[in-house]
Image (cartoon, rainbow, N blue to C red; front, side, top):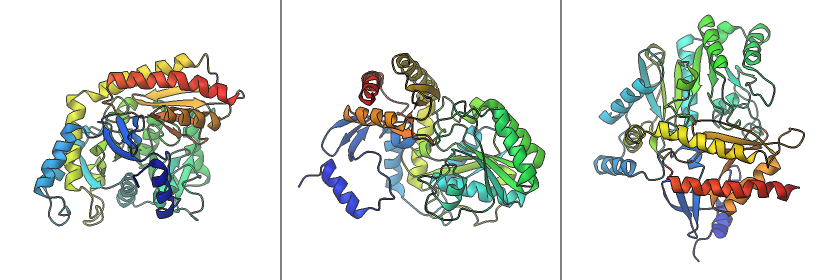
Length: 428
């Protein structure tokens, strides 16, 4: 029996636990740049990019070439056992690229959640403190510390019992919730007065653009204020750039757009073009706080992933993908805003570079997840893959590869022009 999406979905339900979420019951068979073909041979335009992982497109030739060349030499030694030069080279390049005019060091792990976990470990080791402050609506992973820092209960924290201690949340500033940067900073100071001695705080962690929370962009005033608070109390500022990094926002890192340097930066997703690799880069003296053996992991900095990441950095530079992200994002935002006059449910359209969101609301201005789901389902039927996000599930996020050909991008915009008004009519 040939594989079909339906029989593979049935087999999946039998073999894989339901906790492993499924956004689209379409099984990929092959992919190229911004296009994917499923098990039945149908073509899709990929506006998800593996959740901002293949920023340089599926199977970029230079990335494939780099992995193939490394495969001919060796696939694994464990850097702790037998190190290799490429690990050092990538660390040197990230130390130069990550924002901050100070000496830096980098360690490699495998996933974004591991990056967050290790940043917290490093912060605690350096400061001798325990508490970590995060923001409502933020997402930092599915490990226990990652869950504890994540500011969204369902589905990430629900049913998993007590979270890690000494983790605190304050509101993230969003216009739709009427929370300003000043109010968010006041909430941190209030926390210091009522619940947490600031001299017990090791770190404040923040996504410069919230991913799962709805592509909410941190105001520059918030970042400046957080930097001042951290400096005042000896707290480390951690930037979770896992989804925003590597050209997605029109700069190599989103913090460059916000004018503030973090003490520690978490990276993953777009770093290695689809290979599992994550990193923490930070102030050299901070990174050196843990004892030897306290950081790393068996697969951390796998040679194949390191080779891919070095190629990704080359491609981002050679193809000027940061600039392309800014152009693609501006064109997409303009296109979506043109639809707003005919689709009042299409509320806020926002973005930084090619990290763009469309928020759907009811006539009362409340979240409209039903409309978002109709748009997602109808675009999927037309061969365009989209993702939803947001605490209310009412936001469509757009994360196509930065290398998407102009003709394919235009085709996707045409689908959106047809589907969004039709989805509105279907809900009336």
